[in-house]
Length: 138
Image 1 (cartoon, one colour):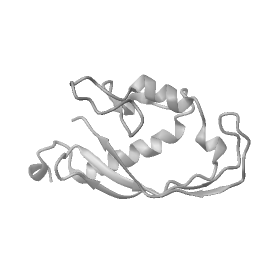
Image 2 (tube, one colour):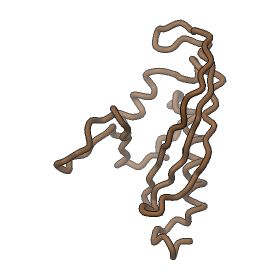
Image 3 (tube, one colour):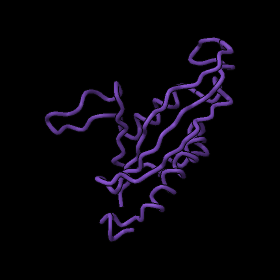
Image 4 (cartoon, one colour):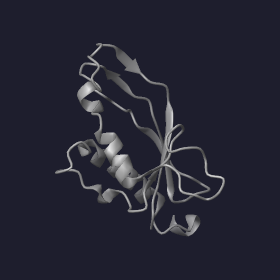
């Protein structure tokens, strides 16, 4: 509960918000439909090999909100993999960072559409487990 975590959003509500962001991201390719206010103005996307090495001097790393959205809109995974099933699971609030929700994915998909100029291969994919997280402002 809120008293236990010290964060103003209860853990179950925080997990629900993370799931809401995942669902809303399905409209990302259509700026007329997608509401980018689900991301804070100070949003940063940071992942291995994306956005640079971990900062040792305090500078911000990763993609800004605008850079992140532009990057994801530069290709359309759902056209290339229309049956993409991320199989999200194991949602939980971090015990050390009560504003962070961790979850896992183990995606399955078949490459049946063009991707960045490459023709469909028809290959079925089952990716290894990935751990992902989202942090939330108050």
